[in-house]
Length: 133
Length: 133
DNA sequence: TAAAAGACTAACAATTTTGTTAGCTATTGG
DNA sequence: CCAATAGCTAACAAAATTGTTAGTCTTTTA
Image (cartoon, rainbow over all chains, first blue to last red; front, side):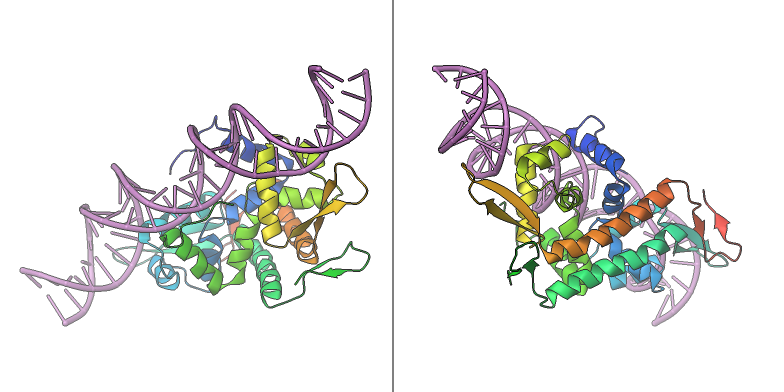
């Protein structure tokens, strides 16, 4: 995996934010382009490389492999050999840490849907709650 | 604000993922470097530019202004003039959309803390649940 | 015998995000 | 009059992420 520059402000700021609250590291774990989609697919049983590829339209093999490795490095999932297969098949399995993430991602999903679905956006602290949209 | 290249695979993939599930757009809204920290600070009453600056150690004015604009463009917050101030002061206010995000970010925070705090990581689907750490 | 499936990796290029520097405007305090 | 506070913006540079191309290896299937 590509190493980040440990002296850069970019890196230092990320470390600093991670210290302020674990929320910041949690977000950075989850915020890769395909990550939450991968977690959901594995959750739903698409636990092999080629199944993930089929279900993530537009992803390249290189990119998929990279995202999987990153998720593995954060112990969201593990990679296991499938016994008695030649050549040996691999499957990806969510750890308890990965599974615990699923309902949280789900609530993010609902939040997004609610407002995308047209829920009014207001400014509650205005004395007359004002409608923005 | 800087315009993205609308023909790039990068951009196209992001759009595609947003169509698959609102979770993906939700994550991309929240995943900027300082975003969740800004939302929390405003939530706790640090609702002015200089207060945010003081409470986000290491952020530059340029970067803060940019993150605020992005959050505003997603209607997570609004910027309002403070009446009877010369020169006119500005405050940032979370919309209902932004407020709804707070408990979700909070659960992400707890998830992060739990495992950072040493909770065992296991692979539940193994017949003998295996301990990784 | 040749192609396809499965599971990748290395090297590189494009794009995007993040950060730096140097400015601006207006008012108040010493 | 000079500095400080408040609240920014423009132009640019650095770093990180994402995507592309072209391979690898092994086995099964046509």
